Length: 639
Image (tube, rainbow, N blue to C red; front, side, top):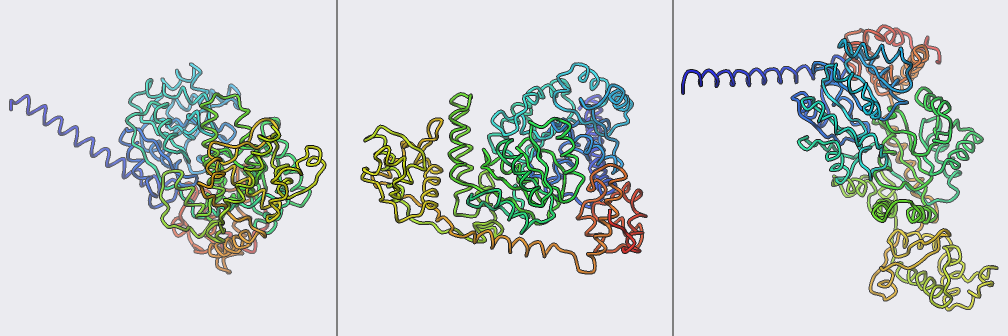
């Protein structure tokens, strides 16, 4: 090798070695930042590998469940890499709280969005250009403004983080058109690493995120979807508002939680019903003015024990760690939406409940909505497939958590999780072939002999042999199937119809929800196919069993008796701090941190610094106050 060639090789080797040393130094700095800023000693799960990928300048697509620590995956690289990390987030209403929480940790964070006046925006822009921001939050629509793109072009950008990345998927449950333009980030800043993050996505959505954001070379990280602290329960619908009230009073009295309803009118009625029955609740939906929505969201984040009744317009990005339950009074449209919504419970890892009422009318209504939608055939087929998966989750006799994980391509670690209703009180199944034939035969006779189509109520009246005015009017008491179903109750027949709809052995048609046969119906009528059905519970045994199980798990998470008054004193102190600063209580400390402090009872700042979740800034800001409470818990007055 010539002298010049050797020199080039040596220089190349030297540069590679320097790059390796720099990368190793950055990784060490990442762990130091985790401890110094966030108060944790070690990364969890895939966090370290994701952070290493971004620190090394690579792109990443991250699927990690709510509460799994996604935000650290971009916050730490933004603190370690030179420049400002730009976070693209659709959550304008939450940006102030996100920034407040980071500033409480000593992170220099800011945001630019439509809630600011001109002077506020200019201040943040000046901080960005002066290199005085670690993180800047932007809504995706800001990047369609040329002035914003020009501003970023003048700044030093360390990374782009696309939060809630499932919003780019047109078949997803939170589609936002502005996300489709984010592929320009890679084109405009090819050397700046990008990280796309979401809490839930199927393989198809995962691929769509990658394609639409233009990240073909990104490494993919898929964490486990299981949230073992959440108990999944689905109960038969029977006066859902009263069922909800009983659930809240018996199991979640005084807890914060979210109740989801399908319509705005149902949200308003349910919130009023809960208030009338002694549970403090507020409504949230797009029909309320922006000011009211902002107040209700702020109250939920800052107050303990408040219930928000909402449409799915509420909840994405909510970082309140102590949401103890998420309830659904109507069937969600997809498993992805359901998982995203239930994942807002129990972010602190403590026992929480995902509870839903589900009945025949849910199936009929959702089928009608799909048929009447303005989308094309492809859209309707996709919507129907999403609904079928949701119905399979509701009707399963196997472990509900296992079915949920399977949907996201993850195998359950055990055949039974022990913390869902079907595990706690396994449902019975029965051979419903004859019952199915009776229902299908009734539909056939109405259509072929009378050229008529009717809904569920009339079908059941005919099977039960009821001579109602409508039955007599149409001479349905003369049909050969009249009265052949007196072996089952009305509730059981409704369960049969619901499950036939769920199995696509029956279909809903038209504005009035009439029942019609499907291509699969013939095999049942011809006795070529067995139909297995879940037995309808006579009493809510599963709910009672689940309740006792939840209480047992909650007891395991309870504090030692002597630590309880200390914990309550710390909560009172935290409440006063939060009120004085105008921030949610969890911005000061999470409950989990207060629990550990109350149990360990540190006697000095150095001992307090060993508590998980307590970084340098919080130790300096709140350490002396915490030690004062620990020295005399009885002196702390309620907030």
